[in-house]
Length: 126
Image (cartoon, rainbow, N blue to C red; front, side, top):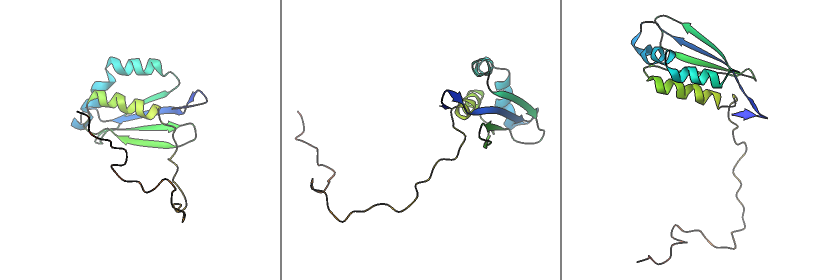
């Protein structure tokens, strides 16, 4: 997602194993045309591909505000790897806001009446 026309994702770091079975989808995604297209569409992102032996693959997204987000990529196909990259690019990089305070209940009932599940149902059409 972009704020004021600026995408918030600055850096993608992809960690994978060069021989492990859980990294097979990541290795095939690295040689795919979809990744090349994604990288050409998003030149503002810095890409790091790091071999980390004997570990499951994961991706780390670094955002403008300093927030880091890690997503595991264990045993997923190459199309899902690109979808994870797009998902990280489309996020703002901050934790979602939580609603604070208690729910509001009012002692005065509605003048429209009590809501019922079949309130707007009319006679069935033939």
